[in-house]
Length: 360
Image 1 (cartoon, one colour):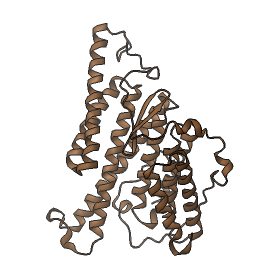
Image 2 (cartoon, one colour):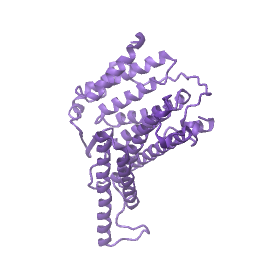
Image 3 (cartoon, one colour):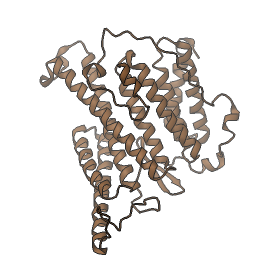
Image 4 (tube, rainbow, N blue to C red):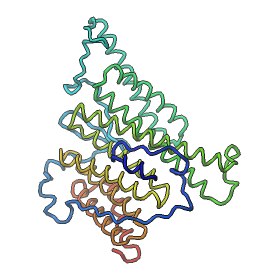
């Protein structure tokens, strides 16, 4: 990445210049890995003293639901959803006034509310269906059409009620899922491109240059969607500064962006590392505000550290340090929820990486 891009890289809003070389590995780029230390407070058992294990254990993952002080947060797949369609005190948008600042009639208010609810309800259904199709059917094209439609509906809803936490949050979730879809597609394309057999390419992409252009477009779309998701979560936090869903999903969006950048190759490791650090900040902020989602925050924090370790292809000491920190986080998460299979699998993978070549 160029120096100018790094200077405007503010860890939340960074959008690199759109050019082919940014997302396609260059054979002529040489890269020296920087030694970046990450010192967090996970060095002794005393670090867990401030957590209320009794209270948190009552809020363990049970399928998909968490009971939260202000309603139900539902975790589906990766992100936390905004399923509570009821208005709350946090949604402070003055619905009694129209865009010109004049009071609206009761009938107009009712009509607007009905239309708003119709937009959000339909979009919410499309988002769930798209997630279902991607998870169980793997039909990306149909799911993407659903996500485009959901984005259109939620954008209209946000225009009607700019301070609606539900509408803003679900729009962020739509961008996030769409960005995740594009990330997976970009990895499929990179896999095809990496194969030496040119016959692997479909007829419509028989020209390698066109295939590379398509890959770059997918990567650019992916980053744009994830940046938009982050902006919506930041807006959600301006509406409700204690919204754990926004912090968690913002961290996920940053993690996906870091993965997208890391996929470019070793020359992009420094920039990917910075975005992983931004994601970690979100998960850290979750834990500083509430213990309600400690297991998820610890897990995602650990994943980000483990992924950062994979950027250290030459600095093995730093690699082991990051893996050890990730291992500790997974173990702490299992103290909170000993039956969490996702965390158990992550811990097993982390231990295997530590043992590789007798580093453990």
